[in-house]
Image (cartoon, protein in one colour):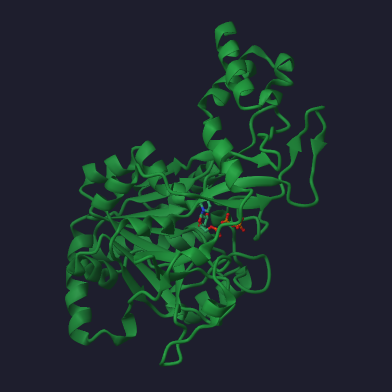
Length: 414
Ligand code: UTP
């Protein structure tokens, strides 16, 4: 232990993070050891570099942004639909499809105390979001006679509650062995001086590393290996908060396979210029998504010769990958984007600070940055009212109320 302590002290001194041992002597032997181990796993050089990036504003004007081609579902011919359905259904029936739900987010805007997937949006069935999503794989089991593996990404903060919820609900009567949970990675949060924050219990304040952490987390937790063992070829990945997400869409799978694309994403038409959605584009010739926070007003409003938005394909976080791409890119380091958040912490004097304004940097990788690793992708434009009912905010747009109405309309319920 003494040796380990010396090693840690040296590491902390090198990066000016000595405060992390301020309360070390008050800890039990076990907690001391846990803290030292946690500190040893942290890449402080990476944090130092990330801190530097907080000092400059990213300049997106440097990249060349252009529209990306899309295929519109409503414009497919009957022959095309038939052809793709056949190919897609064959892939599904052969057990070559797996589904991943990213449920590691904090869901701060919704303000629900538990994991977002456990939320009851007030349907007459009172199904939770997780149960609504589970209906997808249950229906596919009925229709195609296959048990589709469902992998759920959680975070350190919500893993226990998520697993407990599934246990308590008997996995919604879907085979328990087909549902696997895996935790995403974390990164320490730092203050405006680059100092790592501590929790009240003297552990390091760590935050989930963004939905872009899904690939690394899949590799580290043996999920990609598990999929390969099962003969999986296509992986549908979506967020937890779209209750109209179609996990199993034969036309989408068939089209991706027929066109030989490594990656495919669904989009819906951006509703209005300021809508808070990312849009698909080509960035310096590569596929990508430009976030609403990154886009200039001029580009957000720009229209093409038909009067449609130039960048009109909104990202609804419905992505499908070929496994060979996931194998290849899961070792790549995606860039981190900076979020400035409110985060409570224990200060150097042992006081617990509950800030009223943002005080800490959180670093998140974004899933769509992976698109720059492929020369080209399929963007499949579907109807918003059929496939997009997000639960983001407690009230107003993209709230349980709007999602409930969309769900009821789609299913012809009142
Ligand atoms: P959002 O960007 O909407 O974030 O995530 P959020 O954390 O759920 O909600 P807010 O911003 O705190 O209100 C989009 C999807 O990506 C998942 C979320 O669970 C959601 O399904 N996600 C996000 C992760 O799995 N991990 C993360 O670190 C971030």
